[in-house]
Length: 148
Image (tube, rainbow, N blue to C red):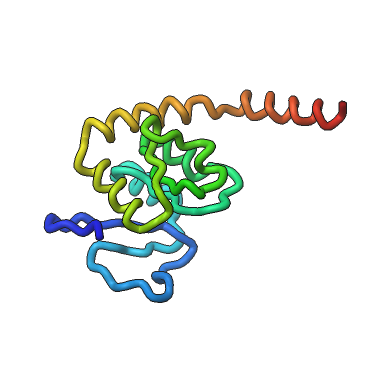
């Protein structure tokens, strides 16, 4: 439970505007559904971190986008491609796949400004390495390996 007395809220942009089955209603949690780019910019700007709890994620695009905004990313150890992108205690936090693990990580980032600032810097540095030139070089290398 991440609710605080100061009215802080968790915002969840997602493919649905409804909570998952069995979810307990919470005054501190909003499911937003699809979010347009301008609103997403505003949400990223005001976020302490981005939580990407997916497992078997093929590629860490969500994490890279969050890092481009300078946001530390919280992912679960079973996050597939996300754990290839998020390095624990460098640009985010990698936690056990549980609500308690995720909540503890978000609390740490919220309550430890030094940690959040350090991971934010790491996030920006990581995001800066993802360029079109790099992507094209990797694609070219892959094609050469396949053709060999």
